Image 1 (cartoon, rainbow, N blue to C red):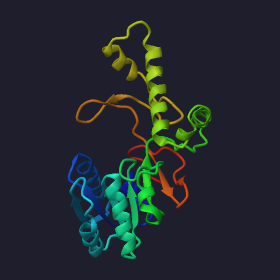
Image 2 (image 1 turned 45 degrees about the vertical axis):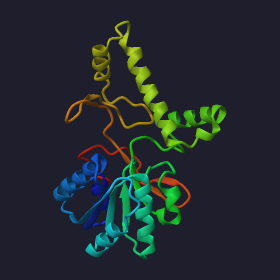
Image 3 (image 1 turned 180 degrees about the vertical axis):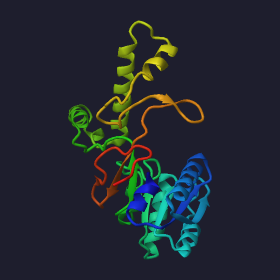
Image 4 (image 1 turned 60 degrees about the vertical axis):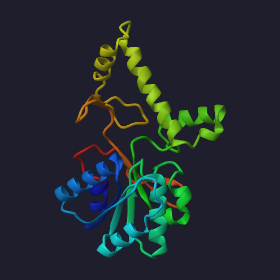
Length: 241
């Protein structure tokens, strides 16, 4: 979705800065595969060491390759450091990451990055805490009454959404509360609307395990708040507008 979004914004050349771990490798490989399928050129790929604060070398090498956008496969701390290093160079590429690498909806990355984070984009797999979706609004009202400090937390909203789905499955299981029946009942959910996550259809995941949500949205940090830039959930294989 990141590659498709950037392509829709006219990006022709992009770079990846990833970490030498499972998260970084997954994002790097996914970006490269989709770029090849979409016709975008990955002109640079730099890999950092996990937990390192040294990112300037990677940023300089990427800058010299001339990409129009950077995709981040780094943890929150390194993502913030990359943004600050880019800004210090007076360079203005698009910067985009996932809900893990730019903490879309939360302050994990833009907080430490400060002004350097303005204009970053991130994908998200649940509504923002400020969403107008009725289910999110009901959660926010309850949080304001019970735990005001958590009313703006994307993590708290996701925890609530997960719990709602878990209870939905258990309520459908009847008296058979066995693990096989849990899996069977979960996989009976087809296009289930939770109001917070994309439509849920549980099924086997590639490489083992199970997956329920496959859609995403994109948001931008405008310097004061996360703002959605895609209105609807985008599912795999569909264009991003």
